[in-house]
Image (cartoon, rainbow, N blue to C red):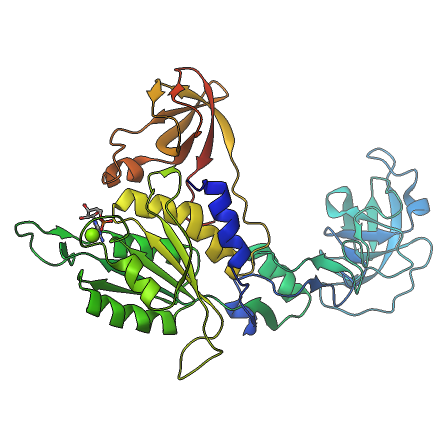
Length: 416
Ligand code: AMP
Ligand code: MG
């Protein structure tokens, strides 16, 4: 059976990166740079004072000390925002506020804390090195230099850099449009009262939240009965309107598991079905190639993920397979998730053959990361996943993990 690594590689190889879009700077946060962020000017754009203080010739205050203060003539004040053509004379000082332009003749800035103003003079009690407290023009970035490459997430500091370099509009990648179609005759809405044989639909809500947590806001959900004609009609519509279709349930080998044959009949090319993973064995992936933009539909391929109906399986498979695909579509260059090593508390067994993601809680104990499986590991037990903060990798070849063994864990981050 297909390994998770091979399945993920097959998915990522078919994932298209969203086309470029220009958005206003105010709308850019959380998206991905589609072009490198270039320095459009030197930064800082001029020599500026890092402190409130007095600009001097360093040689004039070379001997200055607490018990040997030097008196200089105060000739001007320059505030942040002022422009200046001042040429400082030897024996003189200029008062500079933080962020003020430092004239070329000023060799260093003595912090205000070491100076005392007396009328039109300033008494300096500390020497200053050449260049001290001066932020040089271009000291961080030179005009024309690449500041960040394309494919970087636009975090708050990136937004700040974009503003610094005058990007009122930013090239980002378009977000995919996602449809979540949950299937099952047993499903009720969250508002309905339970009745015999029925359960409330957890998956459409949980997956909708998982998609939105990635910043993908174009996401709609539909709840469908296990009826081939209905599935065919609604899934055909979803395939036309979405870049990604997540079907949930009906993917196994039960008598009413119609989703896979319906997708086949709708022209979805199956890339794989079933993986050597737990939870999530019946996971499916296919691609529907479409002509470019017909009758209000989307252009390019629609990726189809068929997730199992058990809520833990659906969310873990989303996390391991769908999330990397969605992040790549939004243009993110490095979607690799960090793992760390932790000491397992409590032994575990399984049959060899499948990669199992055990839901765990990691914590620290004397500078060591420890991890313990949560209670409730069955794939319908959402509580175990809700309490977990990581997934413990129980490798396919292994059948036993000993108490105290060092294992690989993956933090469960629902963002990215
Ligand atoms: P299936 O994959 O359709 O065979 O469903 C597997 C199990 O998951 C069954 O017990 C279903 O009742 C349950 N299940 C399917 N869809 C959902 C859903 N949307 N919310 C909660 N449980 C579900
Ligand atoms: Mg079902």
